[in-house]
Length: 296
Image 1 (tube, rainbow, N blue to C red):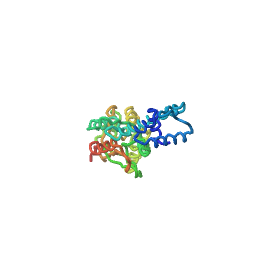
Image 2 (image 1 turned 135 degrees about the vertical axis):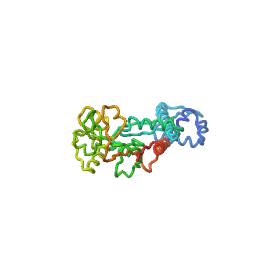
Image 3 (image 1 turned 90 degrees about the vertical axis):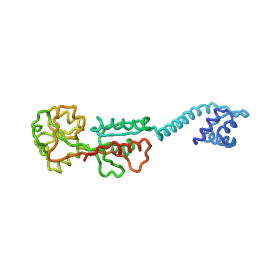
Image 4 (image 1 turned 180 degrees about the horizontal axis):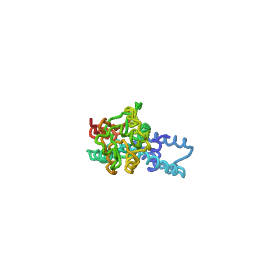
């Protein structure tokens, strides 16, 4: 059974006449009759009663027409959807880490939508870990991701988009906050709230501790800055975190390191050599051109 056979059958059922249907379909009447005969033979059932020059549907032809109408409606809907995606409309599935949720992602996407011919593009948003994003990107659940760089992923193009300064946060009035020039080694002196070790920033901070021979007392691991800042504000310890907007909502001291300059880079990722609809291509180009904040 072919799509053409279903179209031919639907047209004959509507016209109730092979010659009229053949004319509408711009094929010969014998070709149309042959196609319908083959369809009936394949189904093992008679679809039309022949009455002179006209035809009517049999009881079973009417049942088959209901299925055919649904199938062809779905085909037309799919075709319409694909044409929409290939034009100025389209849909982009993105995923990103928590630090980008408060401002960067909503602000950047809104700027993109305000651009020429982008107003009809829609987005799906997902906040999650870098590891889950990478898996989702490779399975085509996401079109574009924003998170940490991941090694040994040759299928993914990582583009640096912004740098985040790493700072120490403490409760208000904490002894370390009174120190004029806090250093990385100070992290060993107090209980430390850390990032989940499976997250991008968790791996970054642990590599930093190893690189500078720091052995802090990590008493708790949390998934993001919101959870870490909540604990620090209640005096459960201090933390080394990315300086993100959410920290301004907590009663905290923000301390800049005096001995080292630590910056965590956030990347945009997408699949290399992979077909992308225009909406996705345009969004990636926009981020490369206008969505980067790379301070040296």
